[in-house]
Amino acid sequence: MNRFVDFSDGFVLSSGTVPIDIPKGLVLLLYYRPKGEYMLPKGRKDVGETLEAAAIRETMEESGYECHLFKHQLPTKAQGLSDPKHTEPIAVQQRMNQGVRKIIFWYISEVDSCSHQMADTQEEGEEFDVEWVPMEDAPSRCSFADDRKIVEKALEAVPRPHLPLALPVPELRDAYLDGSVDRDNPT
Image (cartoon, rainbow, N blue to C red; front, side, top):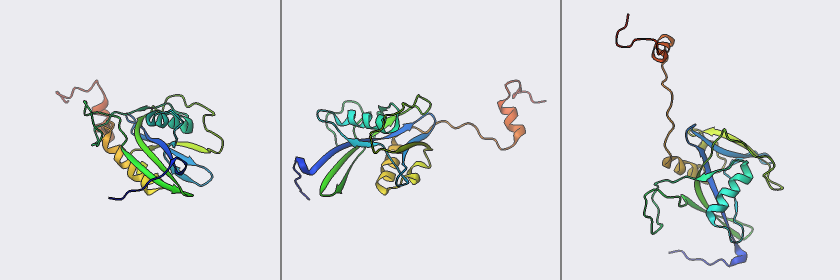
């Protein structure tokens, strides 16, 4: 067993989310303009703030979109769950930066990509653009391997959107989509 101790001046607690518009099959990624990097919204929790509240707040601040935590059924070591659906973190990540350990708790959040994006929510130095990426493309768009793994895990937990019926032949497509066609009695 590996053991280590960090005192309060040697670590920070952060939270973030994988924001997903489930019905539309889109994942919200942040594009950090100064470095050309794609990442997930995250940030430090405030004093007295829960990890869950920090994840929701940071997602809203960095993206301008309100979100709420998604109840999923991924396995967890959390104790006392009475319902198989829960909002426990799907991952924890640790980074070392200038001798300070950053511990990030990751959640899945639901976001409506068509809802109003609030303006001027980013703090000074946060130069993010929001990009809505199809679920299947989101992991590969992330700039960092850890983020790719976190997005992949989140996508395991959400239902896939219903895709429209794709019929390659225009006549068949028109017939199937035209309600006036009698499918039981073709003429």
